[in-house]
Image (cartoon, rainbow, N blue to C red):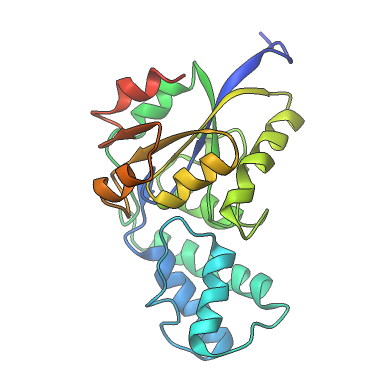
Length: 229
Ligand SMILES: [Mg+2]
């Protein structure tokens, strides 16, 4: 049965790291390796805070910290090298990437009521590598990624447009993530903000930015989350 094109549907925009899964540091390791091979600086990301950032934003900060100006072609070169390392690292240690509590059951519960999509600071190919490692990539209809904008706050409108281009009229749009950056990007895009305490930020930090719903994880918090749909 085909969906009526114009009937608004709730859209959930899921963050990846700290919300759906943990890669056990594989993302940082892959970026460090790529940066060292291309630009000769080891551990360029060691002091960079990853939570809620976009990959392009992280790369810019790594160049600043290394005292180097960022070449015009740095981002595409790093992207390709990073994704290669990430795939290799995740394949070498199956089980390093782990689903967070309540997954994948939460996606099975939301799928009949809402469109599951991604809003992430990962490049698209990195998101596919990470979610593929835990068998989740196919669960999402579309996404907004670091390829789309260096500024996470620009990603909700991009996700809305992408939904429409697929014939989905977004009704309520919900952003779920593990950092204050996720809450801020929900606010910037006129979306409902759900914060989950399974990742980078403490409950106190998340509480302080005033999300519409704050849950411990997607096990104990699942009913409250489903209540928003
Ligand atoms: Mg996150």
